[in-house]
Image (tube, rainbow, N blue to C red; front, side, top):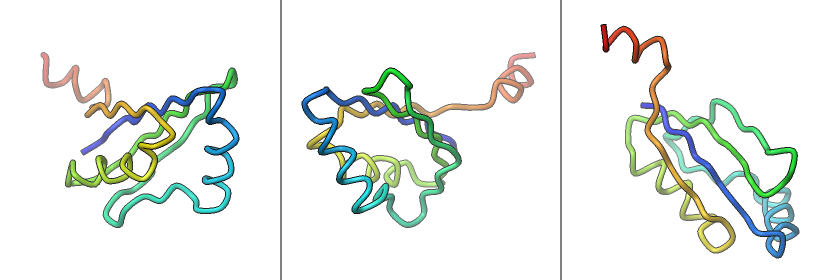
Length: 87
């Protein structure tokens, strides 16, 4: 199953977010595969496409950052797959 994670941080937390990521990496739990990650060029947001068979793993990835980030997690499906199902 695919999940889109949208992580937002305030300017006050920017340096702490960067420092933790450089020192500890993404801190994703086992069983979670990162398919892609994009940073908003204006700052303050990171978009991550995750794959896992267990939704709890997506939540686990968020828990390591909950003190610095606001995280929204959405189950997603590729548009072509959705269109096939809607025909």
